[in-house]
Amino acid sequence: MKGGHNKKSVRVEFVMSEPEAELVKERMAELGITNLSAYLRKMAVDGYIIHLDMGDIQEMIRLLRICSNNLNQYTRRANETGNIYAADIDDIRTRLDSLWDGMDKLIRGFANIS
View (tube, rainbow, N blue to C red):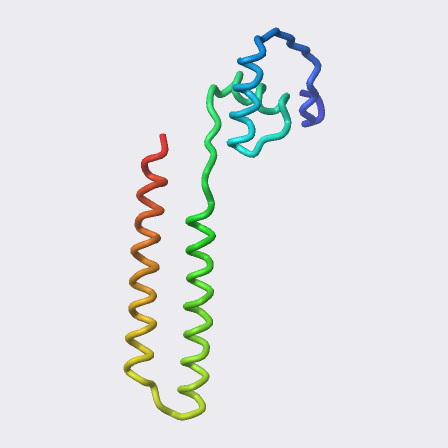
């Protein structure tokens, strides 16, 4: 590689059956990959591609936003009234405990990726 550029100059060609081509397309679709050349190159070099389902993480982010908004509302109320309500503290504690449980499950799931 000259000048730090990743120039591809070697052409590799091979033939596959229709069922094999369909299987490749299905696997690419499962991973959300649209570039056949990049997929085949990655599989040839590494032999595997890890696809992470980010739905659980997006849900955790959503729950964190809700908790953050609630905490801001509780803080605003405490500043306005000079009081902190035990029910509000219990609510935020319960929500945070739930978030920690969810985060623990996510981390354990990542730990099992091999």
